[in-house]
Length: 304
Image (cartoon, rainbow, N blue to C red; front, side):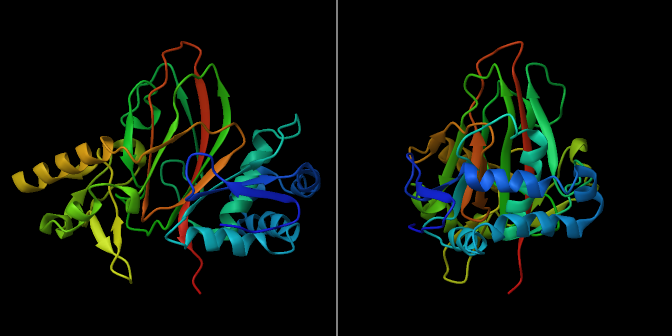
């Protein structure tokens, strides 16, 4: 997807022509650092309108072209994903700056959902050597299977942003991505009658969600193309046929040869349409000093 925006280097991802890479040049970063200093993290968390102020600062530096381009990418079925990052990391590009940058990017796309796990519009979490959590999110040495976000909540989840804030002593842990239109088994499973049945979706205690929801695994967009809402850990099959269907779905996703495996550098944010992109994580190589900190924002597109 070709575009020229002054201050931003835009090019095709080396692993997939469906993913657009966007590097923010030093000139833009230096101006952002100055403008972002007007707002602290507490203000962003307590006063929602400040999130739009940092977002406008970013968009203004692109002459309001960046917001249009990001939305074009995410709503284009042929793409639907971009990776945006500082072209060069300096000491000034710290975790506080990256939280603000992630906030700015998200608010060019839409409205973030409340993240019940963190109690705010974003969540920050660590992946370390030791883990006593109740989900795969923090289990460093387990494969996090391909999935979409928001399967167990009532709110729509149109898009997902994941930013890497910090990483130390990490080998492995690559990001896995799969576009539905590339998946070898999409048509077969999408057209299975069980795919359109309502499944029950719950969540573990750490998610802080007290209810369960029901929805199918697959739905169709306005053009009749497949959309998916699925994660392997949270469905509660009602009967044998639903259980067997979920097992087949899980196997077909993980065995896919169309998965994209990529290593994201610190400071990068990957943003994807949550209806036709699935994401996951490969296991890390065991290391007692392993540490990765991520930030997550998920939300809905602005209403036209």
